[in-house]
Image (cartoon, one colour):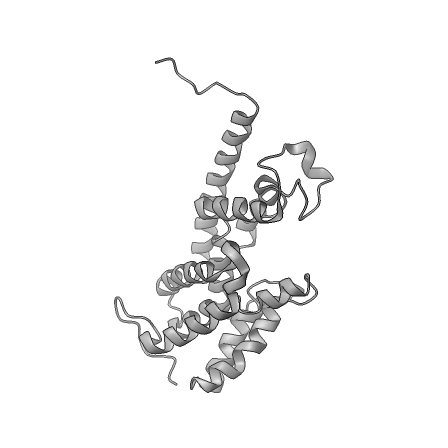
Length: 233
């Protein structure tokens, strides 16, 4: 398969048939993951990655396949309670599928690299442009309005309360009553902009991080009984 074919406006980089096959496989792998990492997450990352890739001159065929498949190992990681790395596992799972679908060995290697490095853990740095874009697109889905929605969705899944204050963040644990959307933002998400790897990713992440900060400041004020913004009618 030739991965250098130029993208045409409105066209799926891999064509509708091949894209559908990759989507079906990814959906089957992620169906039990719920709203945070289910198929809709992969679709958003796919759209964001392709938009960024078009701006940055990336190989959109490599990027499309990698984005659709990037979380196919997450269900196994969940079942192992974090003992397995879903990125490394996903790269391994993708290989036979990609060969079966006719991807050239060079393309298989490039897609596997994107999937394996989208977490950027243990010095496993995204080296290719496509891998860096996938990393950024995946992180952008944790920020902004989408990030707020996903953070509350996850907090609901683990049974956390609606909100906690700064004092509760110090000694709180993941998957506990205090594992709120605000804790997720303060412990992890607010640091994402400094980790982005592309200029577009850094710009978008900074804007989305500020949106989340403003939201949680407002939430804290409302829960604390603040009425500063209330105007008399």
